[in-house]
Length: 237
Image (cartoon, rainbow, N blue to C red; front, side, top):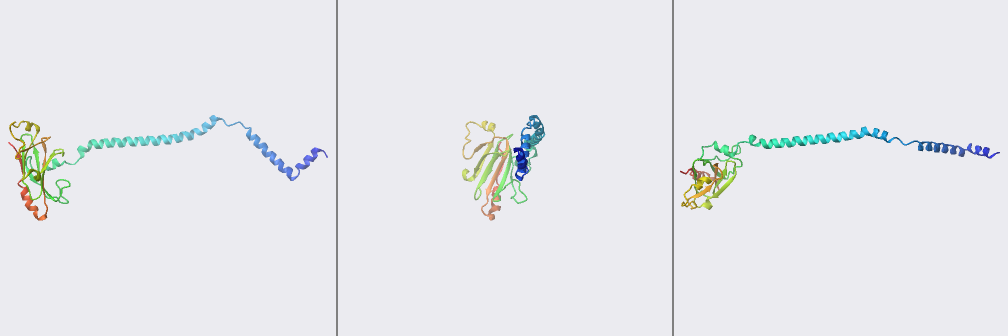
C-alpha cells in the first residue's frame, strides 16, 4: 500500500471527514478575506441619506425654536408699548370725576364691592383734593383729629413728593402748595418758612392731595369724619 492510499484511507475515517470540513471552512474564510474592500464612495452614498435626514430634522427643530423666540419677543415688546393705552383709568382720572379741581371731597368708606381707590384701609377715613396749580397756588388746611392725621402729595402720574402728619405739624396742618415758578415769584422779604405758612413745592402743576385720619374705635368713626369734613383746599390769591 502506497503512502497515497494510506492517506486516502485516513480521510475515509471519521477523523478524515472532520478534516475535510475544516479545510472547506478555511478555504471559504480565505476567499472572503481576499475580497477587495468596499468602495468608500459607495459607503458615503449609502450613509448620505441617513446623514442628511438627521441633519434636516435638527435644522428644522432649530428653525422652529428661533421662529417661536422671535414671535415671543415681538409680542412682549408690543404688550409693553400698548400698556398705557390698555391700562385702566389712573387714580388721578377716577378722583377727578368725584369733584372739580381744588376742592376737598370726602371718600366713602371702603367696602368689598366698592372702593374708589385700590387697597383702601378700612381703619382710616379719607379725603382727597385734585389740584390744579395752573393759575394760583393752593392753600390746604387739615384739622387735627383724635389720633392721627396725615397729608400726602402725589403728582398726576401717582408719584409721591411730600407727606406730613399732624403730630409733626402741631395742632393742625396748614400749608401752601405751589410750583417752582410760583414760589420764585414770592417777595424776598416774606418769611415763607414760618410755622404758620409752610410752603410745599410741587414738581407738577397737577396732582392729588390725600388726607387720612386714623379711627381707633368703631364708635369714634362718625366723630372723626365730622372733624375731617372741615378740611379744605382752595386757590390762594
